[in-house]
Image (cartoon, rainbow, N blue to C red; front, side, top):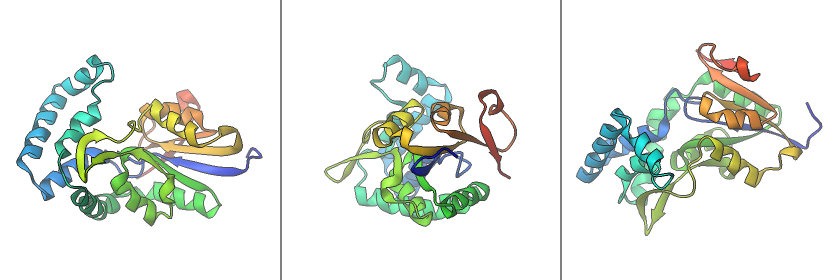
Length: 224
């Protein structure tokens, strides 16, 4: 290992720690448990757009003015913050916690036992990732994620800051960490996280079956 002051493990969440995308699951969970007619209508409209790949096209045609995740997040516009927090806590307990990929969790525990610091870097929402971090002894400040914007105690239907996806993950990390001073490891299942996996000293692709890691010289961890 290079002689650097600290080892940091950057941990993707969706598809890496759980076998699904958590943001849409949280939106659906919240609407199901705290139903509002307008929320259901907005959700159905987004799913219609997504079915025909129109949400992605609209986002692309808008040249960044309309984010696909914000189109999806609009379903929660108007929800009280306390409802979103309550939903997030039960969502974590009922949906996330029982479905954590234990092979990856074991790898994280091993890194921590060896003295590494773990930082979650996820396009999932921080509102429920905080409960995962607490269970994993990850500091609250070490959650770098997409976040739901709240104004006057209600969700605005927009993101608070940038979407923590793709190249944005590296942008957010570079604001907080001096790469020359840390030995960095990243775990991710997604090809979209290639910028992150190539940015760190050691990139680890999380897979069930062999796929694309070899062509980029990345390590791999398989889970069952």
